[in-house]
Amino acid sequence: MPTGSETVLLVEDEHLVRELTREILKESGYSVITASNGEEALRVTREFEGRIDLMITDVVMPRMSGRELAEHLAVLRPETKVLYMSGYTDDAIVRHGVLDDQVYFLQKPFSADLLLMKTRELLDHPVN
Image (cartoon, rainbow, N blue to C red):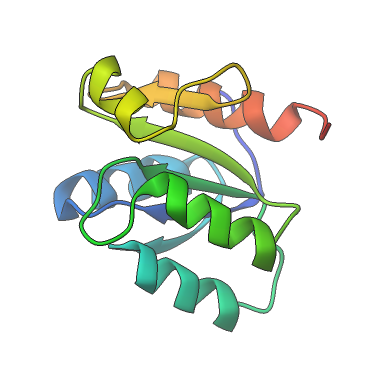
C-alpha cells in the first residue's frame, strides 16, 4: 500500500468515518489533523503553523459544503490540494458543484487501499 509523510487535514462530520479514515492515514505514515465541520477546519488551518499538503473533505456537511470549504482554504493555503469524498450519488454531488475534470473524488464507502492510492496520486500530481 502507498505510504507518505505529508500532513493531511481530514474534514468529515461523521465521527466513525473520520476516525477510521484518520487511522488508515496515520498507519500509512501521514500526519493527520481532523475537523468535524468546515468552520472547525478553517480554525484549525489558521492555528496550524506547519504545511498542510492535502485536505480530504466530505462534500455534503452541515452549514458549509466541502466545496465552500475548499474555496476558503484556497485563500488561506493555496498550496493545499483537495480530495473530495461522498456517499451521495453523483447527481447530488453535481448539485453541490464538485464534480468536474479538475476535481479528485472518492466515493464512499471506500477501501483502505483506494483511500491510500487516491491520496498518494493526488499528492504526487504536479500543481498546475
